[in-house]
Length: 164
Image 1 (cartoon, helix red, strand yellow):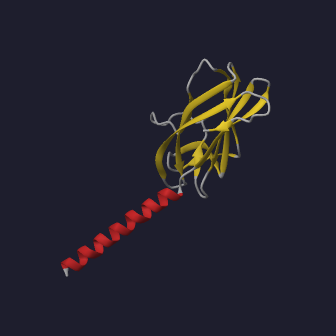
Image 2 (spheres, one colour):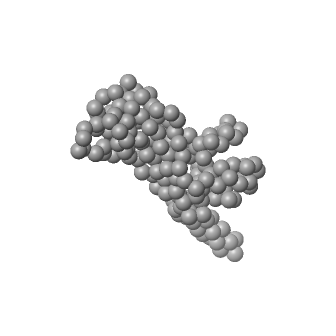
Image 3 (spheres, one colour):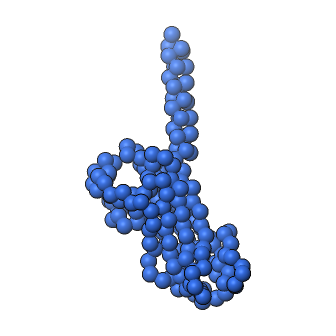
């Protein structure tokens, strides 16, 4: 009898762990990194996210919460380019009370585009950076994720920049 109960408990625990892993894998954000020529030696770096249904990622405009960054993008400085302005966000922003953090916050559902403009100082530039983001639904915060990216931009007419 005790053995049967232990087998049931272990089976339930294994099923729960498997479903949690599968659920967490389904919540991953699909990122795409590329660049677009604007004019002459000015380019825009695009970091676009496709967000799983029922989930959201936070805006960079939110303040840190208890020293935790909800969304941050870092671009490594280089003598190959100059950043123009700050990173801009494009998408349908939702500002609402967040029950997880118990305060009003801004986030994006479905998709968001982060854009950083830059001026090239050399004809071939390798831009490196990273982003930290938190995927949530209205009940749960999943693990904070960090992704590094690298984009090569070749400033030659007729040759489009390529993603690494």
